[in-house]
Amino acid sequence: MSQRAFVGLGGNVDDARATLRSGLSALAALPQTRLLAASRLYRTAPVGGIEQADFCNAVAALETALGAAELLQALFAIERAHGRDRQREQRWGPRTLDLDLLLYGDEVIEVEGLIVPHPRMAERRFVLEPLLEIAPQIQIPGIGPAADALMRLP
Image (cartoon, rainbow, N blue to C red; front, side, top):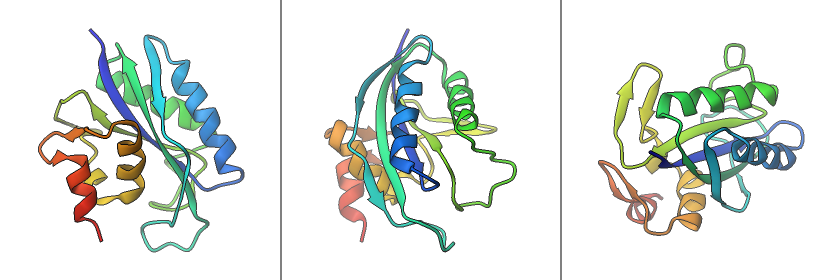
């Protein structure tokens, strides 16, 4: 049985636009997975107080037969293939490619290493705007319409 999943993409090292495009291609190539839609690329200011270059962000919609944990591991593998080393990087610092599992169907998942919906997605314009571009009516489980969450942001 397949699920519709949404993945946030971001990066700000080297040619971030090219890296995100490559990341989207890698998502489309995942086994038992189909890329349904991808937002345009957004340029956004970094979050977290660390001085660094602006980010390039996007959101992709997937249809996948992979389980949520299996999909998350596949996302980590794509990050590693694009030069990301989560063990060595600074939290909220520069990164080549960041892939976040934002939504997995309408499931709420809280297990070690995996929280869905992504715990901060409703607080981040750089997630909500591209998400709403490709899924204008999307609901965030436990929160409500993503459009309402966006309207609540400063």
